[in-house]
Image 1 (tube, rainbow, N blue to C red):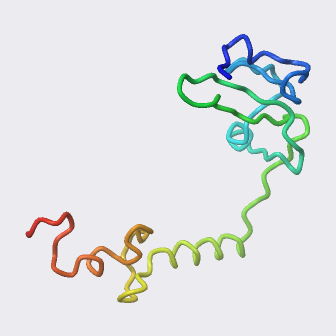
Image 2: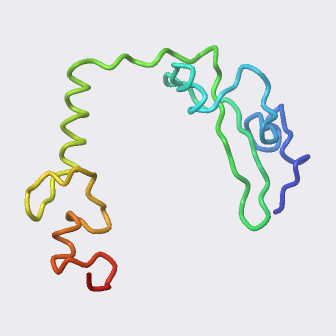
Length: 129
C-alpha cells in the first residue's frame, strides 16, 4: 500500500494504533531518542507515544518513533567505573587477535585482524606496492 503525506496524519491513532503525524509535523511535547539525548534526556522506560511517517516511492514508509518529553528522565551521569569499562571495551576493539598489537584504530570487522596481518604481502587493494 502506498502512503501519501495526507495518509500519514492520524492524530487519534485510529488507523495505525498510535498517534501518527507526517514527517517534521509532530506537535510540541514529542521528541525522538536523538532529540531527547541532545536535550540531556532519555525515554526512561516509557513506551513509544507517537510516530512520524515519511512516504517513500520504492520501499515502505520511513518511521520515527516519538516519546513524551514531559515523561523523559535526565541522562544518567557517567560514573568512574562506567568510564573505565567503556575505555577497556574500546581498547579491546583495537587489539589485533592475530599479532596482539594495539593497531591504533578499531579493527574492521570485515577483516577480523589489523591491516598488516590481513595483507601480509604489503598490498591493501590487490595491487602490488
